[in-house]
Image 1 (cartoon, helix red, strand yellow):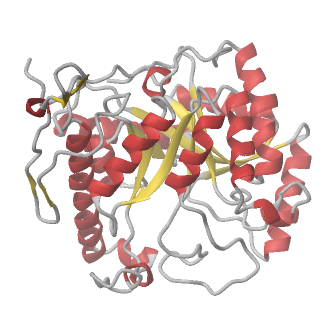
Image 2 (tube, rainbow, N blue to C red; image 1 turned 45 degrees about the vertical axis):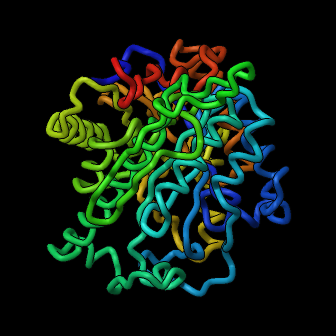
Length: 403
């Protein structure tokens, strides 16, 4: 079931990464590369996104240095390298904002679901109900070497397309599905009214309302309960980026939002149909599931200016920008046309990746948003104070509470 339909307002999010999604973005005068590892830099970006009434921001993360080579480190020193921890950035920014959702990336492959359930529950408390997470896997050998517990074979995009590569992906995404299941059960392991806090009787907690989750799977054996009470949203938002059937299946089984990368409307229709079919197969046909389209954007008042800016950055980087997502260079009005066209193909929202954050994020909030508002296609004020509320998702009942 889709939470919105083509004539309804669309949802809009922005993906934050470094100085922007073009590898040469850090060289632009507006880029602030010296501030990249300061709290103030990230606070400014999220405050700007909230000014534009966006549904949420995502924060990229990883367990290895950024690389233009999919499977291994590229050794380049002329692009941004290094990151702050996404969950910690989100927690730092949360008290400085009031309505916008905060979705840090979490790599499931080498982290423990117990830790992450606690971290995201804490983020939900700190933000008063605006937390989510973006689930990401890591099959890269050099990242596994940071942890020393598992070894993975060499990896490239071609090898992932082979039957052996698809099997490897399936194993990673099945593990991610179990991971999310553990996290979700831990969020429910305290009932909403488990804390009594009654000074007169000396009872702080009702032990009968804390539950063992007793999860046993191939990768995880987790008893529970959590040590963090149930988050304000009950279940913070789970999201995942997906490019093909195996990750589409994870979105269908466990996510509230899937980010996809269609390059035209036929592609979008086919992807949405596949995810909906997988959702039916997973027994979730009655549940709301958002499908957001990802676009890398260069926005200027003149389309030629946007294209020239992209070409100039490509020249600085020594190569044309290559992305999994469609790259758009043009005006805010042209982008609004494109988003509405893709919305008619079944997408319920969009996650935009600003090519240069210092330039293209304000272009989204101060030009694209008013353009969409003028068409009646985007909110003019925040209509809810939780991320679930903004996305039109009800607060779910606790699976362990007696009916």
